[in-house]
Image (cartoon, rainbow, N blue to C red; front, side, top):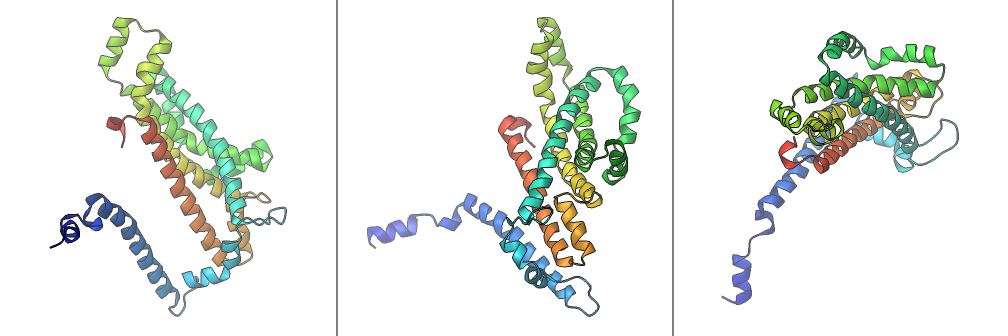
Length: 279
């Protein structure tokens, strides 16, 4: 046996590496699942009486939109990239306001039991209102589509951030508070060295839930509001024109963007939180 043959037999195979096999499994398992679902969808769409197009028909009908997502003919006649980008801009603004207000209010509610008792019924009532129900009142109050859409995003996303922040503040170990009292830490140091780090995992839980709700809210708001660029308005316009394949393609875009936003929040969370506090 030559030296080269010995090395070939003793060196581990590429696929025998546990990390490589795990990584391949993470990629191939979802891919196979998606292919099976697409095959089932195509099968059911081919049955007599089926009203929705199958994946092959969807691709054929929307091939131009798939190939040219960046086109811009003015007005609301834009490619899907610009429709999604417009919606994401609204989400970024409304979500940012909700994060600031939600975290600030959550800290106040978490620290003060009397404030919590007074505001808890209001929070519980308002947070159960669906995003679509806020659209008419926001339009009536603000008179314009853009600020009304931002308000719908804000009022939908603020509650999970506020509630989770308040829970995180209440869950701070009493030992931490005792140490702060013994050391007579100033309020600023207590906030940045004890309260905020201890509540941060709960805050990120609220932020992660809120980003999904914000994305859902803007789609609902744009469907009702007319004449604005956005993926929600794109869906409603396609429905009015009977273009079901375009609606399905837009739903795929919505799902992928929502998935991407969630992964982005997980990435930020893992970059900021220590290993022991990650979910």
